[in-house]
Image 1 (cartoon, rainbow, N blue to C red):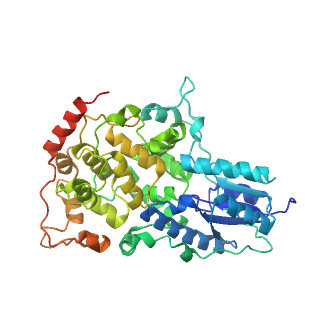
Image 2 (cartoon, helix red, strand yellow):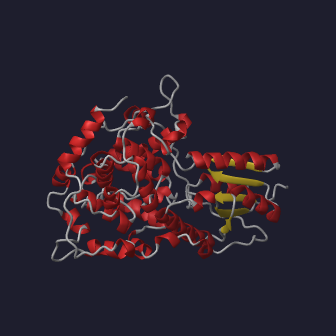
Image 3 (cartoon, one colour):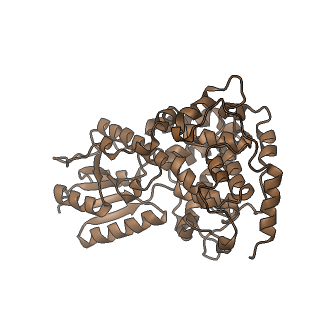
Length: 473
């Protein structure tokens, strides 16, 4: 190894050139930088929609690197084996990557770092995926936060460094190692015909993400506090998709929101709170990693949820055929766009876990398969918040009424009409596109009768409360 040996930059969920600490550190060394993306077991284990969307992000980022005079090397295999092979091929003396915080990634990264260091390679991870490292936010007693509001109060006044520009130059090695073709990875294979439908709704790449942030701050952030609850309005930032893959940094979003707040735009603080809600999710995943697979409140392990993923009511929920309009509209929005309005996420989660008495893990797994903005921390905390088993959760006896919620937030049924085709003389294009996206084996038609509720709002509420009152903890 010499001072001029290349650095391998292990690209993961940081598909951007600007405000990227790992890339900045690699470039600052003055050494050649070899960006590498690895299709390992964690990538292979992704659900259909997030894997497909990651593939789109990798493709766009490879093009961005090429425009900068660099390139993205693609390799399939175990992360450590791939990196060791690249070290041998290139003479690289260092490997750097952006830190991850979910338990599977942490376990992988610890093993990789220890092994590479044992090989005499400088291996290190740096921040970049979050505003605040999870261990850096502590209660007055030195512990971690279990409730969001005090967490927000602790971090809202903290100094957040300004985002950095893209490096002026990414030094290339004299010889590039061989790369696999992205098409060989078949990232979208499980999407089948749904890919063509969802593709109309994605916003891929760093430039698109920055444009989305700029448009939101200029046109929507002032009304965000109110508009974000209206599912038919285009009132949210939609940045969760881009934050998930690191196509924009949380620092860029934070400072855009702070500037808007200083300009007197009333919805800006609410936007900042939503960014910190994401931080809180990772704070909890870091300190209590069991939240991603099991009940955060372990006394809920004995709660009598249905765990049959093939139960008729679960199948109806997945297919948007519960007979509850708000639930069905949201589930169809998910299948067509790969995302779902936040109000809809709360409603469908409450309906599944409370009205249908079904375990939150079934919903979590469905979202992990169908969301293009799937995030391990946000998904786990969101589902456990809705189910009542998580930290800072909505109480189990608080059961969202999907009928009155629809009346409150979609009084003119604009959202429902946008996503439900049955029983409508002139269904919307978006409602009809659902039938183009779903598997043919579902045998669904927009001309079919709309179903009666499988469980009414009142019936489901009574059943949920009865189960809660009979609990043994």
